[in-house]
Image (cartoon, rainbow, N blue to C red; front, top):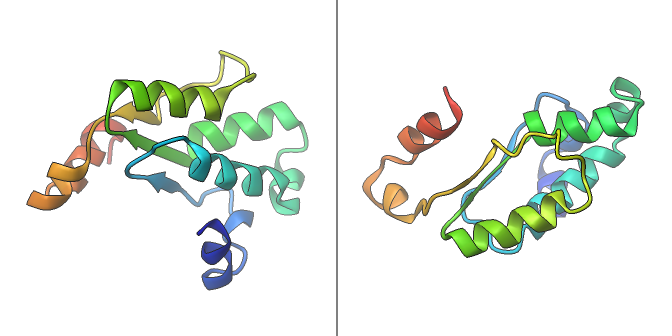
Length: 117
């Protein structure tokens, strides 16, 4: 699926302003694969030559995630942030089941509530 994003949107992982969301995280693998592609982008490497600054930028500005339960939230965020500096904000990852919001058409309101407009 991550490759499909690239196939359908050439250079998607080269834009330091592009954002990505997993609306129903399970293991954290999807977001981690996106982070890996962003991190390895030559364009992002040029913009953020320091590895620490680059990963911080990606996790604090480019990726977001919702986990449907606390246990899944803990698993996913442990996988995504495992071994990384605690100074990197985890604010873009929340425990909230998006399913009812998607069903009743209020998903955007939840996103705005959790992450601002």
